[in-house]
Image (cartoon, rainbow over all chains, first blue to last red; front, side, top):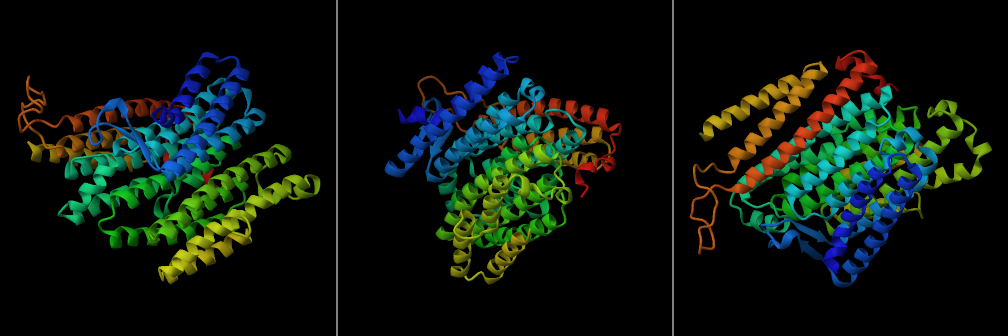
Amino acid sequence: MMNILILLPLVIPFLGAILTLFFREKVSFQRGIFSVSSGLVFIVSLFLLDHVFTTGVFSVQIGGWKAPFGITFVVDKLSAIMISISGLMAFSTSLYAFGSIDAEREKFGFYTLLSTLFVGINGSFLTGDLFNLYVWFEVMLMSSFVLIALGGTKAQLEGAVKYVTLNLISSLFFLVAVGILYGIVGTLNMADLAVKIKMHQDPWLITTVALMFIIAFGIKSAMFPLFFWLPASYHTPPAVISAVFAGMLTKVGVYAMIRVFTLIFTNNPEVTNGVLIVLAGATMLVGVLGAAAQNDIRRILSFHIVSQIGYMIMGLALASPLAIAGAVFYIIHHIIVKTNLFLIGGIVNEIKGTFALNKLGGVYKSYPLLGLLFLIPALSLAGIPPLSGFWAKFSLVKAGFEAEAWFITGLSLFVSILTLFQ
Amino acid sequence: MILFLALITGILTTVGIFLLLRRSLVKVILGLAFLGHAANLLIFTIGRITKGKAAFVPEGLQSPFEPFADPLPQALILTAIVIGFGVQAFLIVLFKQNYKSLKSDDLDDMNTTDML
């Protein structure tokens, strides 16, 4: 029974994607199928969450092949949390999409693509095999490539070219790193890798591969020197698509990084965490300074994503249990808040017809409720108590002080003050 | 044989990176294709090449005779090739559409999304 439950977050949206293909002309059917399937995924994920917290980690071997040989799907607390948050996001964006996405895009498979996107995302959260992770990444990326270009406006196509090219390069890095790791260790199962890497006699060889993984996931999660594709592309598609991308996609990269660096590459933490913490600091600072220069709401929010990614990576790099818990909480907080902000940005655009800040005065006067709706997640983003952003930042800063990493902690506080000014 | 394949991988990577750094979009597609081939060949080479020893289990035994060719890297490459093929097809269509709307395939003309 539990075995089937693990696979449901993959099977339901996939079946939904196939079903929507049959109703190309009947958009209302597609809407129904997508919202029902994403709602079901959310319910299933709550069952998973409950099961993980009561009985612990459980897994399923695909096709009955035993662990290091077959493909394993594992649900632990982290992946159960991530699955349920992605189910929630899928459901809420589906409701927003009904009112906002145009009929043209709906007819050309918007819901089908969104379903396959969530298949890829859920697959990445569930898999316990490194090469399988690559495959789910590709499923996710392929759907996102088409989603970002869907509609074919000039800005979208330009953004898509940058997004697609850089993400393909990151995929190549990932593929090569997986191949080399298999050549060195001879297994791709994550749990098996964790055991075998500890026994490996040449830690520096493993560290080299670990740095390749930092590059691969760093491009995907928009880390410091590799983030340029994000502000160039995330603001081009309609608000719903931007919101899903902003909420989920970069966080899948961060999730993969947490998974890989807490489970597999733990043999040489001074080097990997040292690299990560420098990159985290630079990511925070560059993101927030980039945001200060922008005028388009969506571009400001895009740069803020970069800045926030820095906080998550900082939690990972500090590597104490509190810091990693803080990073995970930060991811959850960030997914909800950022999706929310992009969606509200979309509503503002519907009302005023522009995303440019200098033309947007007076929204609060005519729509006070909308202003309030924007204020709550925006303040949460800056980290004002008692909103979720404060607790996320608080736990990270506390972990920073406990680890006596004064510089990065000071930097993170400084950046969060800068965030408040915007 | 391994040395030869390693050299080919290096050459393919060099060509791929060189093409990626050109300004023309068509060359970017070709560059990504070359890099993809380089990655596949690298996985093939690093999986320890064993000639003429297929990993079949003889009747009555539990495992094939050592040494045998590891089939896993080949399975990985097969998957990667299929994915790469799909992505290539999409890339070509996307870049063609982009060329139609922009009337240029020069990467330096593609900066409208980066305006402040």
